[in-house]
Image (cartoon, rainbow, N blue to C red; front, side, top):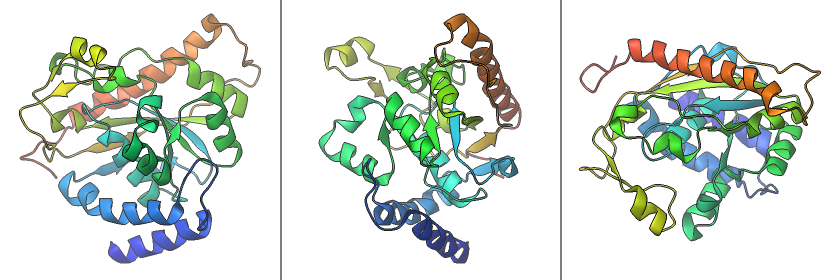
Length: 265
């Protein structure tokens, strides 16, 4: 695989060049991070990607469930799209303003490809042929108590309006295995609110357990061309429900075939 990884590095370097882009992506730094993270992706979390042939070499709005208490799932999806799909690419995760404002993590994440999640950034990235990664559950997706693991939180509608404006295909994705990184967790919601943090999960162990992860890719979903960006919420609702349903079905099927710490193959 290391020979293949060197070839992927060459493809990504040719595709993105060596100059910082308008959103702060440093291609050389992002590719170096990818090479560093790949052994963790492959051997520690033992990631498998299902139906990767559904991804073509074109821009997508990748929409996923959000799991795992801390956003490791985003890193795993980004690594999968850089190393295992046709037309390897640096996915551009749309992140909360809280992350982008942090002194060290904000700079590190933007150099790796993350972008402040507003409509203008999303549309401009898609226009340039980039693929973006969106978690419509927001922080609520990773701030779940154990009893709500793998239960989708209500999606926001903003990504639908961006898909309409850009005419981008929506690619549903489900991650199964990340909730087991921290199987015992308690959320101090009042303290998080007092400290102005998006979430404050506390677990008996600091580092994530090596739970095997499966990433399931659904069929692309296109919104009707006659749908306007100014469409009423009630006109968007059937499409929101359909995308939620597709991701929930991918998740449920994945749970039926879930691997465990003691059965990783």
